[in-house]
Length: 437
Image (cartoon, rainbow, N blue to C red; front, side, top):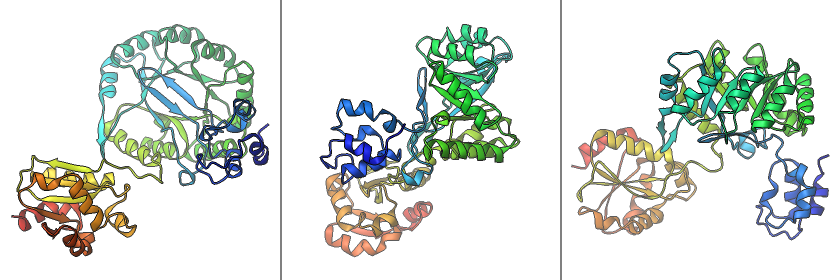
């Protein structure tokens, strides 16, 4: 049984060291009881206490890791909504392929090579789900010649699974799917090959009973298929499972969820819903770059810590091989702001120096309002990055939204000409052509 906050507190060091991020050990204990922090945040808890706190310290949703050439993790989440803390393990995006497909190797190769860059981050798919409509073992061999990404094996045939899993030594695959009629042999195979097992039932009550039976066989690594006749029913079940796991600490349903938007009428909408509402794994019908890109961006936005904006490294960046007479543009280190400016200037073919100041990942206006982007910080960045040694014409272009800083910056940098640029990055090329020549 999970411990109450005061019971957890009695097992903690009670030093109030604040190293866990909370003012007192009692505050930390209350958060631990609510499943909103992990025990590892306390650096001084004793080994004896760790054993007693194991259940209270365990996240309400079990961590499942699929291993191959790369790892895909799902679960280990502790909140219902990302603004409460953050979501951690991004939804794994898998491409469904058929074992009987004569172009299997070609399709897997294309999907495996897919990579797209978004604000400095490279995104790609996470793995493949093999539908055993043909020789599954042969399909596994084929895929492993062109891709090392994790696999989901889709068949209820225990013998076929046995021969296929034997080819994946050192890996952790996902077996799909077990129900009340076949869970025993499939659970045995999952244990034997250290795989995770997808379980499915007609109702949440039946699903909880099934996971308990599988737990009794010694298998803990499971994933839930919630079924549902439509998107609305799936959404309701996914929300219920998340709430029961996190709010009620129902261990029988404390597992990641898998979704199959490939079976929905509108795959894109169903996939977006699954990513936003708690799916740990999503299986797409085929490799379609036009569908993957928005889903990857959506996933990144949802699984970015809302308290820590995506940032780029402060520094001076060269765009289009700038010369000493090229202008110096200034912006903040919020990644979207940086890439908006950099992409517009790069696309225009105009050379420029771009100074990125440390504004704690905030956009220009937000940083200015918070006192994180002012004349003093800009001047410090110009000096720290030794911009003067790189240019022959000391000319700085401020973002138009902070034109008010121009006078103060002139005082901080009396040897520099301060110009006020446009408010929007899209207007920079025209400004540079007309006003800086």
